[in-house]
Length: 428
Image 1: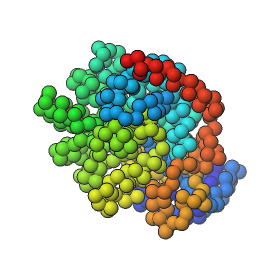
Image 2: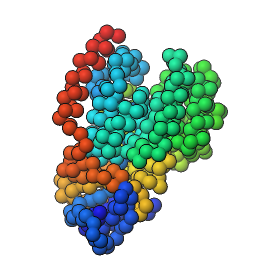
Image 3: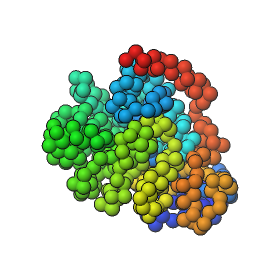
Image 4: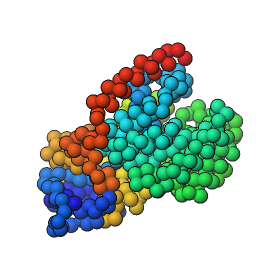
């Protein structure tokens, strides 16, 4: 397949080139050519007036919580969890998890996300949603010890890694929930397994001030220092949130080449705080971008998350972040955090064909002031509605609509679930 006469190709390659009037060839699941290409008995898609860019990467979320969107909007984290989320999740069965993940995957694809990093229950059901919609995902079974079933969860987490190691759309991960919800031995055991199998180590870190204070009182260490003391910080670590970090924490994350998944919308909504992203970047920490779950965001739109990130960190200094740096967070940095920088996050010969096609005549993209103006418009203006989306070389969105699902039916089923979850929260 050739995408012919692309007006602008946002490569996100090491030079961050924006190429004009260019062709792109896809063979199977891979980009195999960029330049002035001649068709060779293959499908040709005309791309005049179109912009092609890498699909966005949601580096931290809980997809199935799409069914809990808007269930509670005005609570601090622990009150929100204990009064609404935990009771509702107690009622969430396997089919709910599957349905929520289908709804989430559909929304992500239609707003330009082609890969998401998930931490939740029953990853097999989320995998079914991935296969149905055609999105790419990094899936993990959340591990925690607070109910005495930690060992069972560890074994299920390991099963997920074994089962999906060779899947074309799924990369497995290991995801201990947090230092406060896992025993030290659990954290170390699953880390050893993650290292053996070369998969990411996905964990919530310093999401709230109270989390840090409580951990300091109990252990004399911040969560980041605690992870380092037990050999759990390295380049495979994806530290979600990292909202409350000391200067020493930041230096440790940089020294160990750990990754941060920044979730500005969720942190703001729950009153958790604002991560010091400019300082983390100055220290050399790789910053990726995530939405968190839709109960705390309340959507999966990574274009919105990019704009919020860009503006939030300009509140004291308008030079703190550039649009290019924010686009990097949602593409190449996310790929690096997941250990997939050779496959996704950029458009180069040999990368997977995870692509977005946007109309350059969209009012949100006009006018543009040169190539950097295009990047500015993508981050600060565009609201996330690609015409076409390709994942692994397969077209999964056409004319803005996901192709793999009966969306009307999915939405109807999702709405029916609200009564059950509201009732569970009211009865808690």
